[in-house]
Length: 284
Image 1 (cartoon, rainbow, N blue to C red):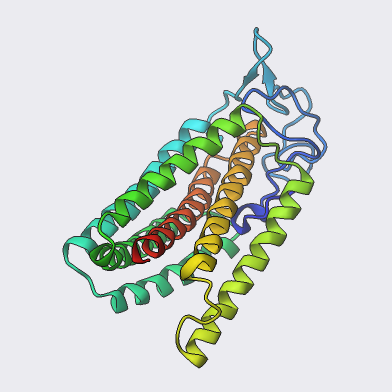
Image 2 (image 1 turned 30 degrees about the vertical axis):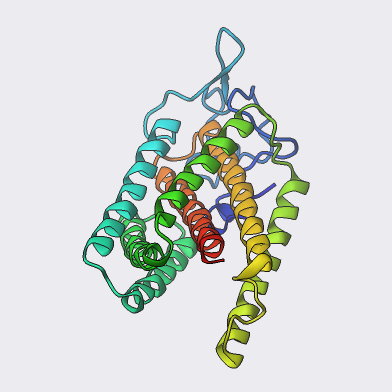
């Protein structure tokens, strides 16, 4: 099973069948992208103790101890750096009262950088940080604009995003959320439909003026925003599984940057949906 997150899809950080928990036991080598293939530069040799996840005295998972591999700590640190760049850039855009039009330009640049990184064969920290800065500038500009007629919307969106992250992490760790092949297929299909509807709504609004299909205002806009947040939460669960599989298989440490990039994309999605939802609710 592969992730529906385009950042991870080509990396193959997935175990076949079932779901992964933070205390997952040893997994078979089938499907391990970092084991068993002579063409894989990270493939373990016969007798290599890092060929699969290890089991500690208490039966729990023990991360590989060889150097230069992805770990939870490395993912957390890279994610903190990436999100820190987003927050810092957003703060600058907010303080300088950057026009929304300029923010949209940076949003387009961020989109291009994000697509560039998504299709690169290797993660590029400078490219990922450049995406974080440009995305942060856009978020700061749009958040400031919305906050002027919906006071407190930005802070509420931040709190909502943090709550969703913590909630999904807890449910994933407790195995309440099970990332199966069916779950992944459902989330992917729902996301494609959501994005297509959003694009149609935008095109109709540009051609006919007004609010297009009405997906971003009124009760229909509220329902659409809630669906967007739920989809973002589902993508978080997929991201958590991809990170865990990368750690379990001893992926190269540089892949931690890719994990940070994927998590940042998802958190930005959730924040934007919260921001729009709160703006609709306060505008009614």
